[in-house]
Amino acid sequence: MSSQLKESKIAFIGGGNMAAAIIGGLTVTGIAKQNIVVSEPWAVNRDKMAAQGLRVTTSNADAARDAHLVILAVKPQVAQGVCRELADAWSSSSSSPLVISIAAGITLASLQAWFKPTGQEGAAAPPHIVRVMPNTPALVGEGASGLFAANDVSGAERELATALVRSVSKAVEWVDREELIDVVTGLSGSGPAYFFAMVEHLVESATKLGLTREQATRLATQTCLGAGKMLVESPEEPAQLRKNVTSPNGTTAAALDSFEASGFAGIVDKAVNAATTRGEELGRTLGQ
Image (cartoon, rainbow, N blue to C red):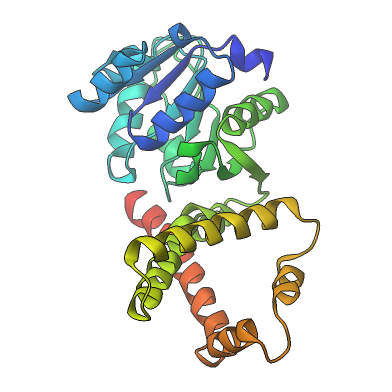
């Protein structure tokens, strides 16, 4: 674990599921709970955090005031108001923290504009910002995350962001163009739902053919887990793993032929493109 991260005061603006996942990863890797504060408007989420021994508040400004690292874990629709509130809170400070934004679709240009100092003498410069797109398997320590940094983010700050994300992500990928964060959103950010939908339909199909729902669910979920583990641990490409399972004229070949006849590759391509495009649309709409 990064010594810089271990010594940092960390503020979470928003205490929902993704914030909870990251906090869980941080504490497991040795971050002291007294170094973490969570600002959350909903009492239920605050109570959950408090029950874990974390400091909680309803004030974003109070949470972020002395932080070295601020994780913006709010819904994209409220990001602008939260950023302007924090900018006002930092306006009389001589320094600003590193901001990690996990708000889907919100661009660096929008965040930088919303964080712009109010003009008081001695006000801090806008914070350095890293955009991160995590995914929900972070809740079980198996996340995949993409990151993109503003030009003013230093090497040390990149290392700090990487250490934070690695606490809940097994795959951590920096991209060199901001628009690629939307591609990460379409691939891994939204990706877990694609697999959940696939398993959902596998269960339905097997149930129609005579298995009980419980049997079909256990077999389908374990198949998904086992295949995922093979993908992670095998040195072979996904295409080769598929070929290894597929005997000529066998049962798997029959299923894959059916996929191909239904335009499976095109279906997946359209789905990833649709999610990517929606991320771009959110950035344009909410950034205005």
